[in-house]
Length: 218
View 1 (cartoon, rainbow, N blue to C red):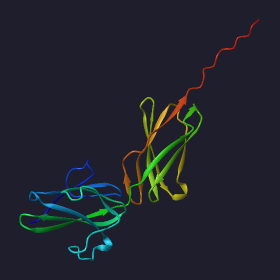
View 2: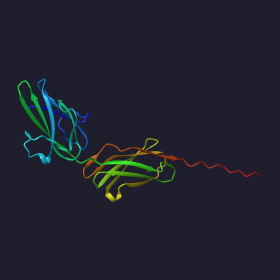
View 3: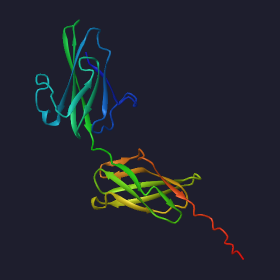
View 4: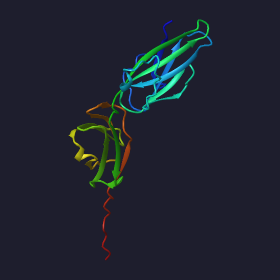
């Protein structure tokens, strides 16, 4: 009997083929329609193990871990490093006295880049500067899109490209006229594109004091 396997990336994805896995993501595996009373064993093979007889040699790849569900039909597996892996599910059917195996190939890609923002200072007066520091992870060259939203809801986008390792962290001098929130909404590097936004930082801008009239007492 063939073993049916459903695979999901974390709990948020719908069942289906894995398209992109990154280090330390949890992957949910589930066996479908096996006879009641079956027993299960999950094993993981590194790419360097692919030449062994997997029917006889257990999979003990140190970069893959069954986080939970070992011995059940539903397992959660984490892969700690980029690379290619094979996941073996072995199902023992006590009714037909058969031992069935199936393999699932998982490709773990390099982590997507990320950005972390910081401001110094985070309060200024109008026409004063502040330094917005963008710290990037990943593999250069980087590019990113910075979004600035002022207190009135006006949104501006700024684009930065070809940032090399010597420029990371990347400093930007900002002089907004109104209190403004900043976040990076997209980062690119040699490994791909990160579309999850960065943390958001707020730069408070205080208006200049009003001039008061000067009276000369007689």
